[in-house]
Image (cartoon, rainbow, N blue to C red; front, side, top):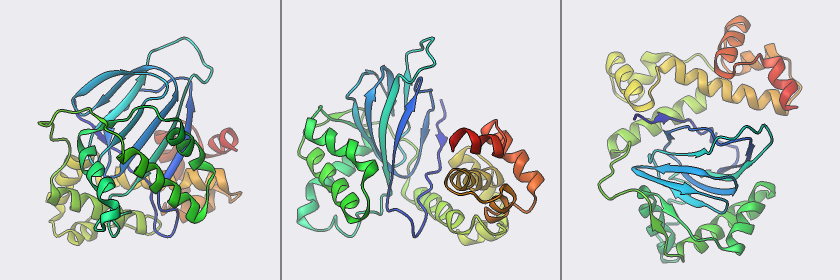
Length: 281
């Protein structure tokens, strides 16, 4: 079963890492991977958890750290209930976020844990750590970053359970990972401008045809489809956080035609931009 590549919109100049609350009727099966580390706390819900080649039951209090490129998903037991019964707090951060600090002895335990997370790590329930994780979405400024470090420090003091087998390789490979990260960073910084496949291919020293094959193999998507995903993700943010007209948002996200923007948005979100705004405002 092939995992889908997921883009995490960590944009330059914005917050250093991504944290959000998820509250849905059920966790849907979404077998995916991304270059970022991910710490997931299940507040409520039960079902099956897949991390690499690990397949196990999960329940409320499940706390797992997945490493860069490791496929994972949580899938709820199906119930005929439209009410929110599945809740989680998810923290996603780049492998580069703490890179300058990991060379110091004070961060030795965290560095070791991040390396071990390539197999997926399940942690035992700790009230203090869980309380810190649950508080994180509401924090701002340096306190937010300091709290994440404290969470990682507390987890690094535990003896976690390895989830995936040693033999599981995942979607990794240093050279490929660097290329994927370069492509993602380039698109994140230039999505609001015209993006030419040939120019991006040259940026990572590949021919256009080789780039197309690499992009498809790495992300499961074509270049244009991936770019549209990034643009639509940013458009969703603007639709929910601003009162800008849809036309203005479309052009500010790199779309050269409002008609094309509306068509792509409907395809990706199964709803029109205006309806999306009404639903999420």
